[in-house]
View 1: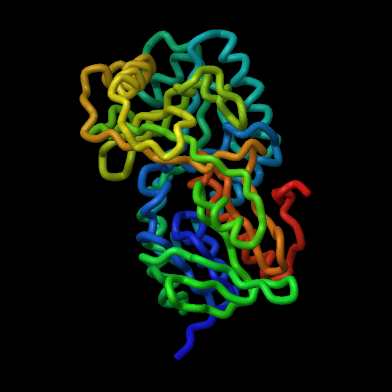
View 2: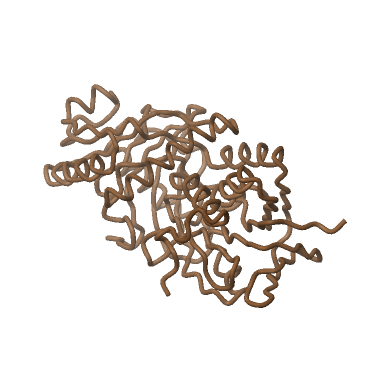
Length: 370
């Protein structure tokens, strides 16, 4: 029997899985395809902080909040594990603390609940923090989730709703007839479809070229250290991280501290940002500098050794925002370019995709520029 679909989603990372889930919830016949295995790309080497109050505008905060609410839906419907930890940003100087004061204003204007805390109040929340910090913020709306677990939980429920998941084969062609998507080819199989979603992260440009669409996404390499224990209960971000949002990068490796506890008792230390293609070589000197920088905020980390160092690739775009919307031939939809915001924005991106396909909306405001 010939396989067919209403929508083929290319890429089974966290964005593609979320898109397939919400499309299936609308009743579409969905094929989710992945050239390797589910969650084997960026999701396999990513953090898991659903972060809200670091955004640059109130509108971005509101979007992240909506995505956070959709995580609660995924928890109820698909068994996605969400740890409701809250999250913190930390300032080492009075100037950074003033900047966080402005960040609180932005976040609260977008609907988030955020507290501005002095150094003593920080210690009350997280006793292992350095005693000389100038202050920080706390956003109780935030949470953590592990991207591979999110993907697997979504896929299990999506399969029960009729989604076909094809792994181990790359899409080699997308057929276009009379200006509209007509089919995809995976290995030797031709699958008729009326819509295709490109959710391939750093590999999106190759898929875009199959239909003549240039997708400006580049791999941005990042190291993550996994520690066997976590001295803190909430994810932490240094205020200086705000300097590397969007297209800005104050130093060649974009080194700024994130400390993120995980549900299994371990914690992650990040992060770095480099443009080195798809080079997966671990830079041990960089890893050590990441640990020492994190110890400035959590001194107990100085004496701990990482159990593992991983290298992953974020889908960077010079637009400084995700790309979500129709492009090229009718029926071709792009959902990529989230860089470090994939875990946060995956549910709302999946909902955007389903709303576009259903015709509930025509645009998202995140389309490719003309």
